[in-house]
Length: 373
Ligand code: G3I
Image 1: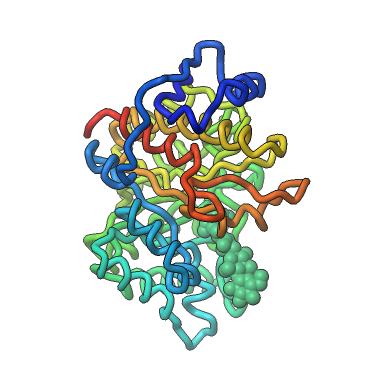
Image 2: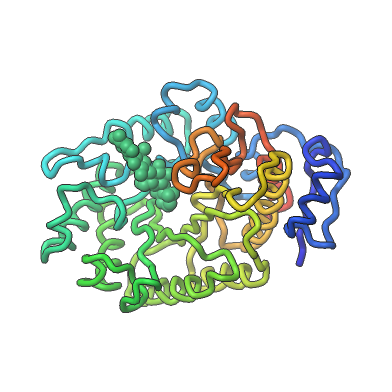
């Protein structure tokens, strides 16, 4: 198993830390710490561009429009942005008769003004319908309501969003439903045909946008059932003629989880064989399983990031990487998956004060070593 942690500056990884990381099971015996020159501070977007890849990040309108350091960090490193929540159904249609695109439009304008690519996230997601839709979604009108929403949302941003997560997280083998679809009324009633309809609606609403299916938990050894389920789902979706261009692999990683490079490489190439592009759409690395020591956590998180990205970037169908935020400061993980010791997670490229962490250098290194497209 290759596990090259490459060219991090030695100041970010001393020998003791390295040995601790190795002892923690992340670094295999074959690991070599390069004593190569400290990498330059060249922004991630430029390193990605050199290889024909795109680096992007999730943004949140709150800090983006109120905190200069946050905005500077985004503009320095990212060539693409995606709103964390602002395009979701709940904020954009708080009542049946009222649409509110205020924050999403601000983000779209920010992208345009700064010549950033914009991803749309997400039109169809079981987790985000506003409260007023509850009864309708369970009724015979549920599929129409969801389709109308997708159409309206995507049409609103026509020409401004380069790529949509049209459908998010539709696969849930644990729900034990046909085709491993999630137990959600529109899927129960319409099956994969309904999901194909969502993609057709999206294509009509913006013929020039790239259309993605986005999902999670396909990276680790114990997630084989999800890999199989998603592959077979994508195959069926394609065979039904759904206009789908890509698969978004969320990439919410867990430092210390068991990652087999060969298994993942095979999975990526099977997705590519379906004629789909691949983008890692929500990278972050949870350190919930790690001991409190910050240096150790940063080292292991960076090593895991590098190992994962090396495999990812080696697949020619991969078009880029989006992190789920630039800075630990606003990560969803603090609330979404808190550490038992209540310490803050060290899950993103920049720390709470916007300083680069070893994870930033690991991403830089992975881009530097990626094959050109
Ligand atoms: O906006 C309301 C606010 O009015 C209210 O006072 C407050 C009370 O808690 O909640 C606010 O809404 C929160 C929202 O984020 C906006 O901040 C929700 O509670 C909170 O659940 C929501 O969490 C988001 C989550 O998706 C659910 O939409 C996270 O920020 C966001 O990072 C997370 O992102 C998801 C991706 O969309 C899909 N993949 C997984 C990823 C992580 O869960």
